[in-house]
Amino acid sequence: MTYVIGADCIDELDRSCIEVCPVDCIYVGGRKSYINASECIDCGACEVECPVSAIVVDRVARKDPELTVHLADSMGFFHQPLPGRAAPLGNPGGASRLGDLGVDTPLVSAQPASS
Image 1 (cartoon, rainbow, N blue to C red):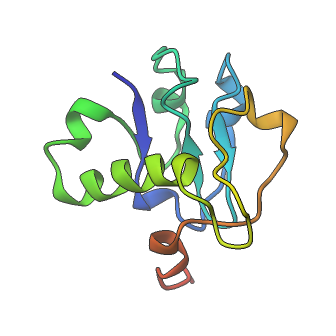
Image 2: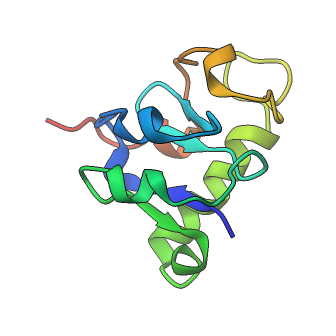
């Protein structure tokens, strides 16, 4: 079990979830944050803290077509090269090591900007 960040996070980037994550597994893209499932310890602190309820447990996400897309997209964020990068991020061992990445998956990049 892990958590996924859905579309409600796009252009939100509140960072409350990042502040409470005990293992530093939430990475900041350009317009959205992503949870690294391999680094997440399933504590649920991020889900409770999210002000827009964008974070859900993966077993819930698998039952919702929109969230299923974001679950697959989140995996792609770590396992496929992002635009402008030659290699996938993989499991860097903590988001603070990398800082804000400033790039998103094609799915998120294609979303219209929030007003």
